[in-house]
Length: 124
Image (cartoon, rainbow, N blue to C red; front, top):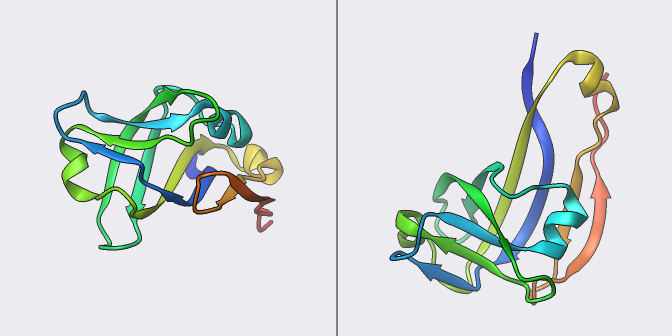
């Protein structure tokens, strides 16, 4: 049996732009993608910590080192620049895969640099 479980997370990233006229997605700094294991075109769930809005989209690669966290397309109406968001990426795993899965979690500074990298341990 496959279960959907957390693969990686970017916690408390600051939205740098909201572009409703741009093709829908979230643009994330490439360095952050590499640090947590997310990839371009992966589906992600987003939670806005200011207003509680939640939505799903897919990832575009942002320029490395720029700190981009941009919400594009219709979802841009659910955020404002400066909002803190949580970006969650899930994966389908068997119980054996789950047993060795330790999701990477980036805890962010206000400037979208990584404050801390932590991992969640599975409950076996």
